[in-house]
Image 1 (spheres, rainbow, N blue to C red):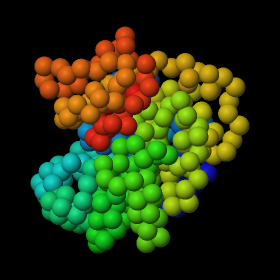
Image 2: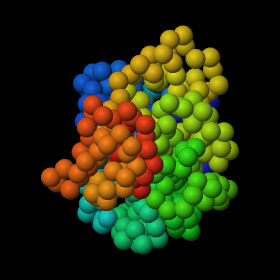
Image 3: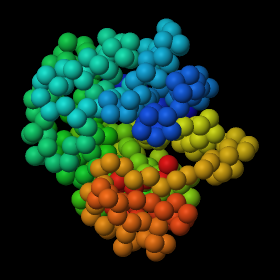
Length: 320
């Protein structure tokens, strides 16, 4: 595994960041012992020392148990979390929850979740100021934002105190809610040159690029302004394959085949706005509107082509 400084935070992170959303209740829902075992395998066998979570993900329990299991070596692990909190009381509650369930006095990185512009940052100013105070007290080591927007990166670049940005980056620009892939790369480059740490998300476009996974991961891995690449993982085979790709190592025999054979399904998340753009993009007529004004999938018709994902600006449809 290769390691890089995360901007000017003083933290050194593995090139592969373990995205824990996939093991938790919102996706695979792995039993806690199974999920904990996978987190430990990433660290002990593959050298992954960077883990991404969020209050929303419901995965603090896995991470806390993992950190307890590795004992003194837990200090080598970097954990990033995120919260939608917008004022002091709610951010204090979010940070206390993370510290308590992780079993730590501090969280390495704490981010404002999904900040799309200077306006959203302004609306969360009180919560961000609390994080800055928490950093002074040693409860947080670095603070920043996650974003699906070019405007979010640019706003954070001009926002005093931001040390880390977690932006969406993939080879096709899927999920960017404004601008182009080139716009996003320009903004990320400027942020990194200003000393802000960058770890990317959605390298596989929410699952839609799984048929070109290696090419897609290598694309993001080649960007000199990206310090680490967060990838959702839920099996050892996925861990072995992604670790090899991002570290330039030889892929384990059978890893590619095992990952390719993993069952996949198109899932519609709760934040679907019912805009119907995906219906127009689906040539298989596998999508329809449900009674709750949310898209519904006919899995017998769906061929996982990914066209609907390209049409959804909110990235509410994902192949899992």
